[in-house]
Image 1 (cartoon, rainbow, N blue to C red):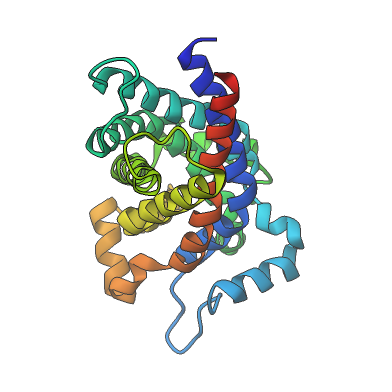
Image 2: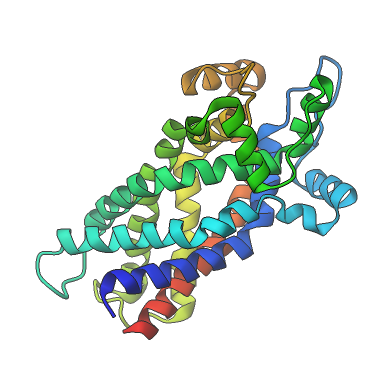
Length: 296
């Protein structure tokens, strides 16, 4: 079984683990990021993460926390397979000789390369997911204009293509790359650094599962700490109206978010994102390591 196929298989399983563990946190994150600014004298739709959870369950039941999961679930195999296989190929290019572990710096470079490739698949997937997760906000705007709200991932894609053509599925590609490239560089670099620290040297082949969980959790936290404002910009652009957009681009989105809410507006939903990052990314890396090891 070739290394590429092994990375594809292990990356797929790791991605599925990430999605199952982390999607409810992600739903709340997107709801908080995309809620409209309240009118003067009025309170925001959600007072915070806990309130968003309560309102979501009250309105939609527990299933509401998994809304929008169809889009990433349908592509999780491709996304994580692509991410980990490109990273594996980057490792092969950067490795000085077969079997030699990569340095932390080389893992940063491999992660950045993987992030470039993953961005082109992540963008349409994230767009569909975000528009489904933020549907309660979009529903109000749709009701005012008499437009029916899409019912699922395929319906969302059809509406987007109808309104903006196929290129509409890649709305927010620039901030997506701004998240995926540095984010994955940091994530894979921190993961390797943490493993080497816990192993007491560059040989991490005998590291226990507990240490892998810790390293994966730290890597996930590092990802979001390094790129969170970019993720907020990506989310607001991707749920923006195609015909009457509020934002002309990423810089315009930053200016308007800061003007409305201050710098803290760029950190809406940060709590759920960080709460998600540790268990979800720990699950990803452990599932990947177990599968990759089993495949030889």
